[in-house]
Image: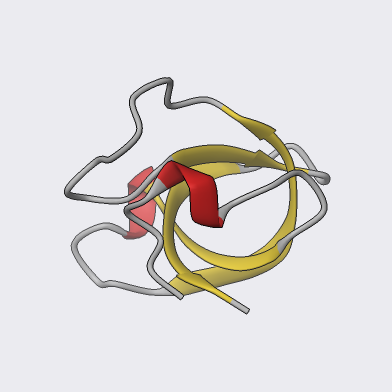
Length: 63
């Protein structure tokens, strides 16, 4: 599913995010969404989320 649309992502969803430090390399980190941090319904680089382990990044893929 598309990680740029907010309604596709809910707390508890398993996602792949790109962390700020990994934006150049494109390395993805998998985890479970705790909080949605982007308020707008869409974001072209991905909705920003906080994972249950505390990491913050933009969603690239929703499983």
